Amino acid sequence: MSRSSAPAPAAIEARGWGWRHASRLRPAVEKLDLRIHPGERVLLLGPSGAGKSTLLHALAGVHGGDDEGEEYGELMVDGVAPSAARGRAGLVLQDPDSQVILARVGDDVAFGCENLGVPRDEIWPRVRRALADVGLELPLEHPSSALSGGQKQRLALAGAIAMRPGLLLLDEPTANLDPDGVREVRDAVGRVLERTRATLVVVEHRVDVWVDLVERVVVLGRDGRLIADGTPGVVLVEQRRELLDAGVWVPGVPLPGAVAFDVTGQATAATESGSAGRSAIEHALTARGLAIGRRANAVVQRGLELDVAAGASTVITGPNGVGKSTLALTAGGLLRPLEGRVEASAALASGLKREPIAWRSRELLTRIGTVFQEPEHQFVASTVEGELAVGLRALRLDDVAIAARVHELLERLRLDHLARANPFTLSGGEKRRLSVAAVLATRPSVLILDEPTFGQDRSTWIELTALLRELVDDGLALVSVTHDAAFIARLGDERIVLAASTAREFA
Image (cartoon, rainbow, N blue to C red; front, side, top):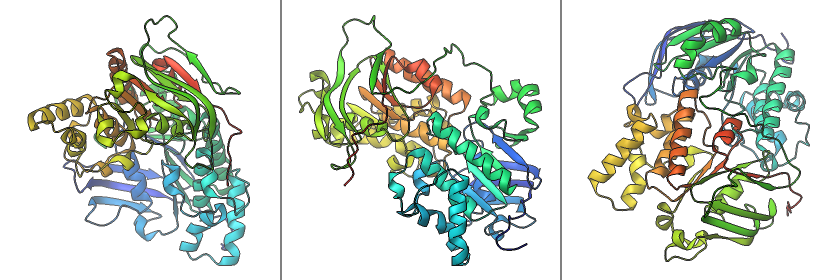
């Protein structure tokens, strides 16, 4: 086979394989026996924390040494340990921002090829072909920082396929993407597989997105053991009850008490009220004539009006790249408005300046809590229970009160079995629940969440949304940035829809 021809698809075999993180008592994956034939397309399912990402990282050979965990049994790619099969696997992670390495699109796609020692005269044809495969036909010098979330995910996919792996590993590749971005990434993967015939293992909670592209479904249970393996028709139909009990999102099964809501784009930013009959509305936060952006010379939206009501849930929706996260951070007092101002109610400010941007971090703790899109950006403690206690210690609560509140949140958000675990070893869904719990610990009056249901299985989604609805009914002002149509249907009392703006002014 010439260097420029397509690689042979990879084979995978696990024999009694397991992995235990160094900070855990229980293995993340246990006694796994699995064989995936060359060219198979596999959807890997399971509840949050079942070890799906752990398996993908192991197949990519990126688990690290003995100090990171304990491995037992055998896991092989093409008959050898994954660490010895350098270049055979291409891994695309959940968070597109964490995968963008270099400042220009072409250089970023070329990075993996350069690490593999691909001859320079072969790299750039590979880069151009990979960008075309994923439908990201931009100039090679285009700044990677100017890409939307969907474009960054396709950029990461292009970087993986440029290395010409025989095994493509995708870890929730459509997480945090708008519907158009989801379709872009899914269709790009389909095109790549048709051309390369690579073996595919994709982890995703959105089963309906991938079910027509795959030919096999493998399911891990809460204990990290295999509970189902077969064709989509057999597994999703004949084992439906078992999958639902395990927290798997099964297509066609409605949520308890769910109502339909189709999130559609709008030409201009608009606010839709879902609570016209509510009387005596108290606005915890208001903004008038607001212009937002991460830098003074890069206005993302201008002329925004915002009212965040106490005892109501407000959702911010819209396509990737329109400034939803930027608006949330500005409303939460973490980014300075470029024009206009955000003001808190007199009751919320309670003797402070009315503008949250002027408050110190300790003053924000009990007033406005913000959960970032990337959970890891907020973790500062070495254990889960320690993370929940950080804000409480800053408030100088006594040890008994801290322990009681931490225990309550651990149980409510299904994190009690992870109390002593390192937050950075948690699954994506567990990290999201921990970041929400850490902010809830200080009982703020306003809670701002960026993609709150990211990585959640069906069971934890139901529990998290039920908790948020309880808090709102008790008077919390909730603001959520989300693409999750079911979340919007359940918690979209007020809706702010952002659309693409012409206000961008790049230097």
